[in-house]
Amino acid sequence: MLVDQMSSIEKKIINRIAMIWAGRQKPDAPEPDRMHSSVRVAPAKLREAQFSDFQAVTELKRRNGLVPDSFDDWERLWRRNPALQQMDLVRPIGWVLEAEGRPVGYVGNISLLYRYGERTLTAVAGRGFAVEPAYRGVSLSLGAAFYRQRSVDLYLTTTASEVVGKIARAFKSDPFPQSGHTTRLLWVLQPHPFAQAVVKDLGLWPKLSRIGGMLASVGVGTDTILRRRWPRRCPTCPAVKEISVSDIGDDFQTLWMEKLNERPRLLADRSPAALRWHFDLPGDAANVHVLCCYKNGELLGYAVTRNDQTQTRGMRRCIIADMLAKQDDPTILRALWVAAYEQAKNTGSHVLEVLGFPEGIRQVCAEWKPYYLTSACPFYYKAADPILHKIFLDDAAWYATPFDGDRTL
Image (cartoon, rainbow, N blue to C red; front, side, top):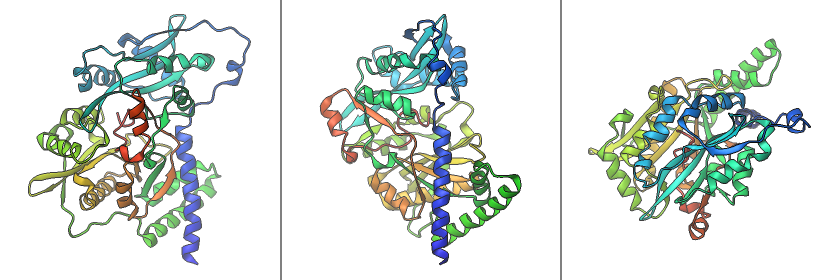
C-alpha cells in the first residue's frame, strides 16, 4: 500500500516538475494586439551583427524575456574561440534585423569543430534568438542567414523554443535522434527546498502552501529512501579528484585521442583548448567543477558539472555539462556519477539533472532510479552533406551532451 501511495506521489511530483521546466523554457507568447494591429511598422533590413550592437542586443533580449550575455561573453565567444583560429574565413558573429536604426531581431552565430571518425567538421550553433512581436512575421530571414552560411558542415540548434524549432524544421533540420535529448534524468538532493519550490509554483494560499510543502517534502524524502534514488559508491570504483578548468592539460588530450579511435561517432571537439574555452565562463568559475577519474596516474574519464548561479523559481540546479570515459566503461562512469552527485549535494544544489548522453551511459544512471522528465527543448541538426545527414539520423552515430551547441556556453 505504501509503495502504491509513493507511486502516486511520484507521478504528481513529476507532472509538476515537468510543468515548472516547461514554463521556464516556454518562450514569451506574441502580443496579439501588436501582431494583428493594422498600425504599420517600419520595414526591417537584415545585416550582420557587429560588436557595436552589444548594448542594443542586450536590451532587445531583456524585452523578450531572455537573459543577455555579458560583454566578456561576447569577447570569449567571438574573439577567443579556438575554432575560429583554425578557419581561413571570417565568420559573422550573428545577424540583426534593423528598423529605424535599432535592432528588432537578432540571432548569434557560434563556430564549433566536430569530429566524425577521421573527419573534422566545421559547425555553427545559433544563440540568443530574439525578435520583437511586431517583426516576428519576418523572423525567417534570420534563419535563412544562419542556414545559408558557406563552408559549414553541420548546423546546430540546441536551445530551441517552439518558434525556433519551427524555423529549424523549415530549413530541413531534423531533431537529434539520440533519445537522451528528449528525456531528462533528475535526482532530488534536498527534499525540503525542492518540495517548497514545487508547492510554491502551484500558487496556493500561504497556509496551504506551508502544509503542502511539508507533506510534499516528507513524500519526496520517503520516496527517495524507499526506492534508493541516489548514486552509490562501489568497492571497485577508481578514485576521483577535482581540478580547476585552467588545469585541464595533456592527459585530457590523450584521453580525447583515444576516444576518437574507439569507433566513429559525432563528437564535439574536446581538446584541452576547446574544453578550457568552453568552461572558462566569465564570472562563473566557482560554479564549474571538473571531476577526474584516475587509475595508476592515468586519466580514465572526467565529468564537468555546472551549478546555477541563481535560483530558478526557488530551485537550484546542478547539471552534468559533459562526461567522457574510456570505452564508456561502466565502472568509470559509476565513479564519476557518484562524485558528481556528492559534489552537487555539497555545494547546496536542490536537484541534479542529466540531459543527453548515449543510451548505454544513461543505463548506468538508471541503476539509481532517477525521475524521468520529458524535455521541453528539442535539439535540431542539419548536415550540409546529405549522406552525412542520413548517417546522423541513427542515434548510434551521436555522442551528444549539454556540451554540444550553446547549451552550456
